[in-house]
Every structure is written in structure tokens, then in C-alpha cells.
Image 1 (spheres, helix red, strand yellow):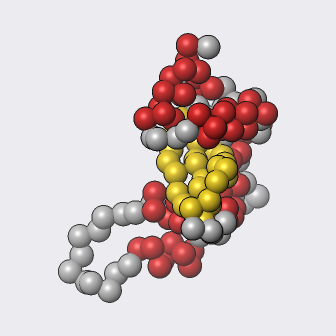
Image 2: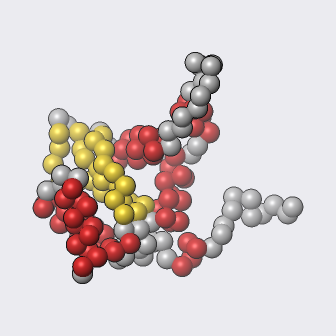
Length: 138
């Protein structure tokens, strides 16, 4: 219970209301998250959940590259190479990521919070070291 208070304290420091915190805790408890080991990752305002996940993940993957070539844009390369929905699916399974739509809207945009932690979906089977190359013999 004391560790649960740590998560609540972190959520409060990010200016989340009591209603938001109750909604988050209910969601986390529904999927049996290990609250003491659940981490706050961030929040974003977006039109919908798909765009929230996309922009949030893309922003988290910003890379500083010192290059004299001003046309080098890593985000455009990531957009063309990554299957963002598959990337998100693996984050959910392997790392216990979740995206929760918070109640209330700001100018027809919704608020989303991102957390990560062990839960019912990221159980023991997620610890297996699966690879996209598992069918290949090297």
C-alpha cells in the first residue's frame, strides 16, 4: 500500500486531479498491474488514441544527430520504417505499456497518459526471447 502511494504521489506532481488518479488506478487494477513497479512515462493531448500513441512514441525516440546535412530527418526515416501499431503491441506485451484516455477534453482534444509496469498481459510468456528472426537458421 505504501508503494501505491508513491505512484499516486508521482501522478499528483504531474498535476493530475483526484478523478484522473482514481480512473488511472482503476484501469491499472483491472489489468492487475503491479502498482509498486508501475512507472509514469508521460501525458499528451491528441485527437484520438492512435495519434496519441504515434506522436508520443515518436517524440520519445528523438535522436540528436550532429550532421552538416540539414536535410537529414530521422523522424521521416522512422515513419517509413516502423510499423507503429506493431511497435506499440510489443511494448504492451514485453514492457507492460498502457495508454489511458483521461476524462474531460480540452478544445475537442483528449488527454492520454502513458504508464509502464508488470501486469496480467505482460506475464511470464512475455519474458521469452522471441525474435522476428526465429524462423531463420543461421
